[in-house]
Amino acid sequence: MPGVVDGPPPPAAPPGFNSRHNVLAAAGANGIGFAGFTLVMPFLPLYIRELGVSDVGDIALWTGLTLGATPAVTAISAPLWGRVGDRYGSKVLVLRSLGAFVVTKAAMGLVTAPWQLFALRALLGVFAGYGALTVSMAAESVPRDRMAQAIGTVQVAQRLGPAVGPVVGGALAPLVGLRGTFFVAAACYLTSVLLILAFYKEPRTRQARAASRGLVEVVRELAATPGFWIVFVTILGLQLVDRSFGPILPLYVERLVPAGQVAFVSGVLFSVAAVFAALGHRVAAGLMARASARTLITSAALVTAAGLLLLVLVPSIAAFAVALACAGVAIGVGMTAAFTTGGALLPADAHATGFGLMMTASLIGLAASPIIAGLISGPELAVVFEADIALLVLLAITVRMSMTARRGEPGPPVH
Image (cartoon, rainbow, N blue to C red; front, side, top):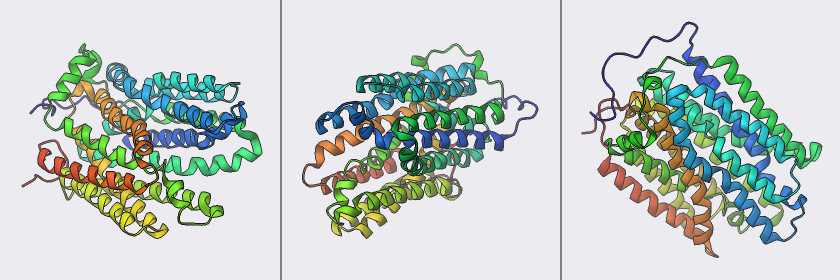
């Protein structure tokens, strides 16, 4: 079957190899890195104002450009770095990526104009991609029947890091200043570097390192692999919904609570979404032992749609919290199921490349969703939730019709 590699078992793990240490190191580096990222990014508009931009519209423009620069470039570069990782090992590439974050975050604390901040973020996109690589590192460190658990562990860290980062950043900013928080962020990434150096050991000398296939050839094979395209579409669709809340959440909240409570209530709701998403990633492995990925992803889309429908019909803070909790846990389960299914389809010489392509789908959603939400919202903010519901129902139908369980995919066969 295309995409599912049979044949001799992989070479034995090297002496001293510990799969649990590998997974925890990948998850820890990922979580600390994401915490370092969100340590400063929520306060970016204030920093741009410090750099001399006074017009609100100009501040919003520079903020949007700066935030979008890294994921836009990374969406292109992730598969390229993944291909290099398949040949030479992911560890060295993760260290390269995290090291680039150390340097650029420190440099961001020294800029004197907003264009310099944008340029550093764009440059960072060339070297970014540690998120996809750490997922790949965790997945290839364990047997296939434990892949969902390993991927879920890294994704839990990806969710909890951004939940912790803004809180720590908010406490640090008055103490060390906005510029100082960038140096603290650089220290977070340095910690991640040391964690990978100390505890991650390449699991094996892979067949990939002797392979000479180029990226285009690998992408063509994956595109022709039954099931891979629907995994790509699933990740993109879920990410589009997941990231659509951010641009309008404070605006929606201010219609429901007094002005003095908007920031606090919005922060609580963001935390609710992050915590429940982490819960979804955490329980996904257990659910995949009982149900197929097709069933889990379809259910995740419909549960999220139901939560958002409640919000549309009963606009209130309580309904918003319930909707974000439902969306968080469901999208967490759906994302882990999708990445695990995609991982089971990858040929031996394209493991990191395949995860890079899946991360490209995630990054496209990350970059495009806030823009789309802003364009379609207008004065009627609920239209964003209505669009999300339509997208989720369409995704559920597409997955139900197109995805089937197959040998190598976790979960029981689909009947």
